[in-house]
Length: 215
Image 1 (cartoon, helix red, strand yellow):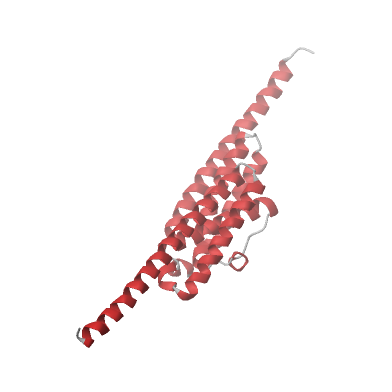
Image 2: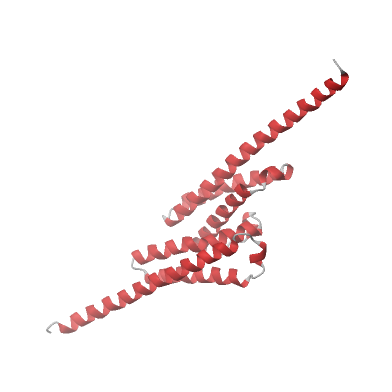
């Protein structure tokens, strides 16, 4: 056999080996990203159900997967960094921020959860939608004060994001999420205002009925 062909066979054998290895790493990474996203979504659902122990457990599992992906990215950044990993980090950020706000009334920083600033900010914007759900749950429980507190948190996040003018240029997708957040806040404010008026009218009618009763 020609030495030149033997040399090519050796080269291509190594190429096939490298490609197969990268394919396996990519498949494993994608599975980890999907699971981390799923766990973060589950954590958010548990938070709304007030199942905080389960929420913590789901977030801890997601944290382990995110950590493994960061380690893989040190050797294979072109495989890890992309849309799917970014989506997982956003969902993970949202779950962490929401849990800490609900449980401790404090915001989690990107450094605390090992997430880059871009995905953190996008996850933060999504927290506004979760707080609408908390506000509506409070209204169903006839807890107007709690729903107003939720609205205050929504306003605070939105106003702080608006104050970062330059961020809209640096974070693709943030303007769209902020526009959605603004509509969510306006709708929530309308819902709370309507409930406050209903509650006031109900209180007035009860007092009126009481005043009409013979003594």
